[in-house]
Length: 459
Image (cartoon, rainbow, N blue to C red; front, side, top):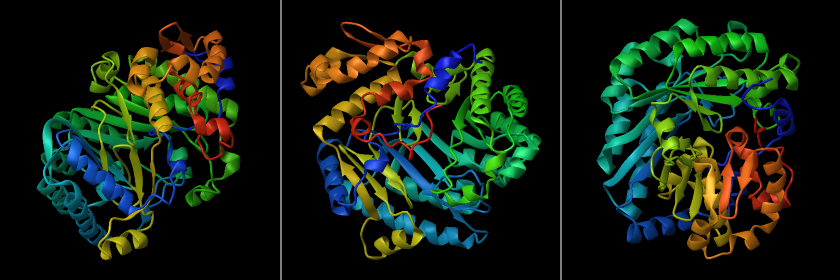
């Protein structure tokens, strides 16, 4: 088992739990939160915090073929003309948003996700970025990233992405083993990925991320060790390592995966343990929550300096800010509210045809939600919290308000995951690998609802 984390802890915390890209989590959103509630939040922002930078997320749902493991909101099609219609509706959505909170806001973070954003042609990507720049100001030094399917880009396309202003790329790799790729319907030779990453470096992208998944069909500890060796040779700036969650009742494409071909729980833990050792030995910094970065990468620097933040796209170096979410199913945050767009193209288009924003559900946070969000994000991002700062920010007595939670943390302190002092809580180096479990202690919703089947396992 891993030298980084004891095997008994890996087994003990092999449980489902939220990823905490928000608190409360998206499964708590309600349909009673409507587009009018969202508009009110936008107008309140316009009145009070226009100078603060924004984050933008744009969801591009289209993929040419289905990857069987995928749990994203997507539309499988080879009809590229559908993208032109979608971009017209995206433009309408932006115009409606800007109508309520004003033109020209500074944006310090932009992320194109999917689906497959590189499903769009060069001309369509150019139109999209021109539309965004008409309505927003992308500030120098910001994070401008796009998810890339290696099968849909060439060296020339990477040049186009750089010219359009993207400075970070995320390549979906998952596994280099040909048999595993065939089992999940995503065949992409390792040589193709190596060539693209080399080109990205020559062009001058600030950071290249590679996504990996362990627990896929036909994976074994031996085969995944070969993939890890190739990734270490590739040496991306960042690595995101995810556990595959097999939930075929929720995600239809996963029904094509042969359950008998999935690795055992013991083999999954062995793959995780080997991954932790491999990446640490290769010099990567464990940022937290499945994310690794080279020491000089901005994400690792932000962790060292206590400047990490977390939003719906994961860890970020950008200051905590409001997130405008554009496109089908996209989730945003404005002030003390969360909101989500319609999940189907038909609903999304219909709302915009009626001249209203396509919000179908969301949440207005309570005082307790805001307090617990502060605590959970301090744990997830800084790995520590000071009672006094929470008390001053939320006008509570921490030890009495969270007496039950502190009692539960006592067990984790005995296991070496946290240190509890008179002034605060510190996550230990071992605890960082199980930071989701530590954060879960402060999740009020989990305290009253222990049915966690809707969440992936935390390791």
